[in-house]
Length: 478
Ligand code: PLP
Image (cartoon, rainbow, N blue to C red; front, side, top):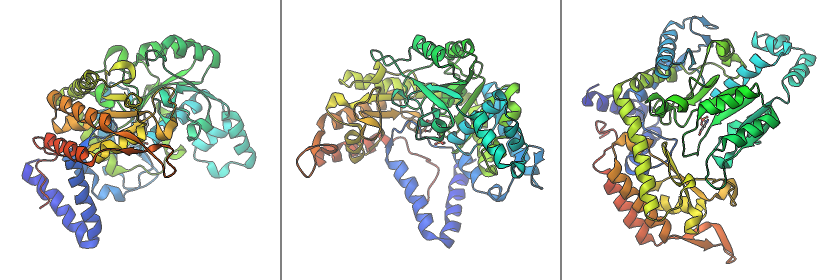
């Protein structure tokens, strides 16, 4: 697409929206302006390409297409079939998977589809068979009780939330923690690294049906070969949620023992983080689980989002290009430059560094909670998010960590020099912020004190860092 075409496309789209509800058009334009101005270090965010964004805003949004390619519960799905088949083909080729299911609307949905597929595959439940055969209306009250009993108390072993796991890996308040009898593995308190012997021990004791690997806030590679051996040793199905690092797998930065696809029975992902696609999810698996996975609708999902599947096809096609591998490598190079810059300035990092796209700063070294640090950085034009660190004394709300990631800034083109400058800005803010007190004068985990002049100066330097790397340079909304 020529630069001119991109600009015309987005301008025209906004003009049409403005004709109906100008406040929505204004909010869309304001979002672009905000994203252009902010030093975005949120590890789970990125900037999708104009082609990916544009593939989402069209008539596919109007179409119901429950079912799978060529086997729909609705008529007239031939064009949806085309885009779903394309997205599937690109996903299979990109990740070397024999089966891909591209309908999940999000990462959580992808995980639920995977959980149900494994339950259906591993647990003998006539009631579940009926439900899957879309005979839900035929299920009697007794069938529903049987379903609960037959599927109940299956076990899941996943990484704990404070060690970097995701809430869908069995965290109690999430549905996964209610569906499964759950136990978690953490990291070694001394190194912050996964201790595979401890995981094996937990698996031997607990004998899970599903062993889950994958994370939202673990700054290191995971050895999936070893995790598969552990799963095999106890007869567990091995599932990897690669939502965060799918782009690094796609770009062949994670290969061999660190590529989950050859080692896991089932792999789930989001498509919008390091993979740089539209907001959505996906499941990859071998032939044994393929039929169960394809029953994601109706078991877990309703109609798919064909417009998002179209955008997934575009983004996955982009990820198959050679320049995506270069992008993926730069994500990691940038994360390491950022980590090095922070370490040199005296920051404490969980695991002492990174070998993926994210860095976890333990801000207790600055005398702050994650909440105070997050807000002080935000005041200074640096967008991050607070995150628990292993065995976090401040819990999941205030936390003691700040998670930062490089996929978005790498998309903009920032490199090692800018990462070092970013480390300097982060260190400046954190070292000049002090904990505040509540109205009663008691120490507060939320309040903080930062000289507004420091925030302003850092904010200006952050904006200057971005100036040579305009976001969506071809798009001029006028
Ligand atoms: N899995 C992991 C590892 C994640 O980090 C996330 C999101 O942060 C999800 C799943 C859920 O993705 P979504 O927000 O698309 O449901």
